[in-house]
Image: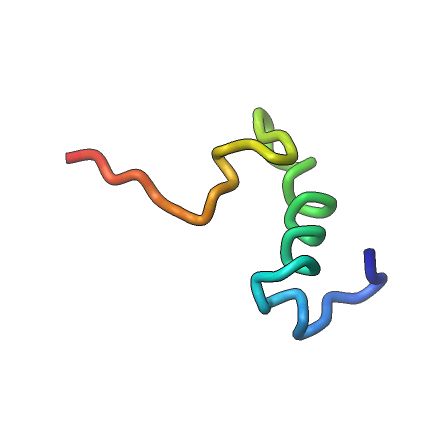
Length: 46
């Protein structure tokens, strides 16, 4: 993991994945690394 956020972190690739899993996920209760809740999608109820 880099000490700084780089433009490459916004590309949606490996660095984006590492940033989300190591920096953000630990701060959201109930989310775990590899969870389906982390998929790049949304659920819309009608």
